[in-house]
Length: 64
Image 1 (tube, helix red, strand yellow):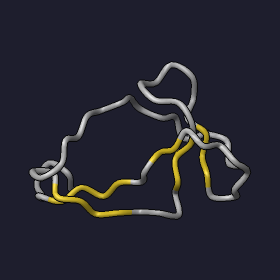
Image 2: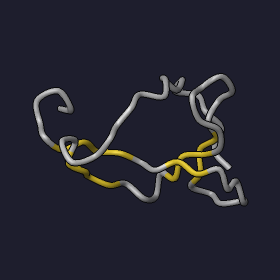
Image 3: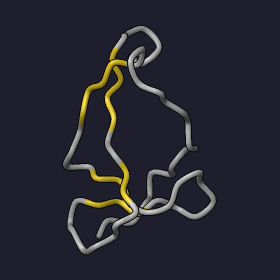
C-alpha cells in the first residue's frame, strides 16, 4: 500500500516509556529508542513529511 498510495499509515514512537498497555517496546539496535504508541495510528502524506526507515521490528515485541 505504501508504495502505491500517497498516504502512509504510521504509529508514532516516543522515548517516554511510562507504563501504558498500548506501548510496544522497540528492540535494541534500531535507529530509535523507546516505544511505539499503537493506540495513536495516523495516516500522513508522504510527500509533505520527512520519512526515514529506522529498521524492522520482529513480530514478537513485548507489550507493556
